[in-house]
Length: 233
DNA sequence: GCGACAG
DNA sequence: ATCTTGTCGC
Image 1 (cartoon, rainbow, N blue to C red):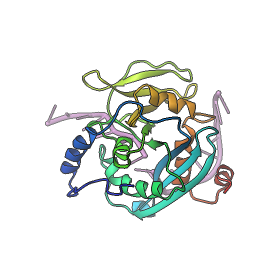
Image 2 (cartoon, rainbow, N blue to C red; image 1 turned 30 degrees about the vertical axis):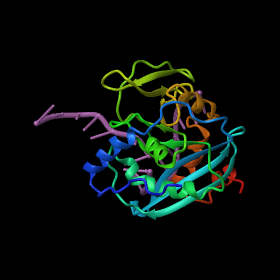
Image 3 (cartoon, rainbow, N blue to C red; image 1 turned 135 degrees about the vertical axis):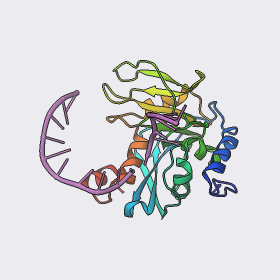
Image 4 (cartoon, rainbow, N blue to C red; image 1 turned 180 degrees about the horizontal axis):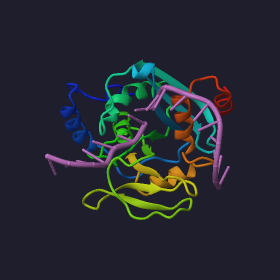
């Protein structure tokens, strides 16, 4: 598994953007995976006032959506948050957590955008190109792009468009009357397939199970009763 | 030059 | 993202 997400990056934001444009050309926007048996949900949280980056990867059975295992990786934070450069801050820890799972997932749901990004390389797309795995970006807010009206009912969706009117993602209402999710392909997944897969993973909450479980472990502190109920192992 | 800006 | 209690609504 490739653990060098930034090739020979010199650490500058300027070169990071150049690297993004190059990697974006390697993104595959068509379905390229069989019947997935295992899903993974990944997310990142911070400790010590941001000094430590904590990444979480959860492995789920694609059929039942039940968690099978999870891994946590803690490393010193490498870079501050810069809009558009999120992957440079979170990918190092994320790759470590993903590598520690007992099994390689067939599809990864990532907290953040896929190609719905200024240079078409959000963290989900970057993660996909680096690992070669099919990935989908599930974000809670728009980073870039615009869209038309969206109905209030569960399952409603509308295209997210870039400045030229090109489709870069889907604004998806996962539940009645909740803020919509912004779904976009990361790698090896089509624009129409991404939102369909996300909806198939939605149960009782706004976030699809893979991302919801990872988010829970990444943000909250361990040991809580709620956490114990979600991860009986 | 003036906003907008994933987590 | 994170600092933080209770509270209103489905």
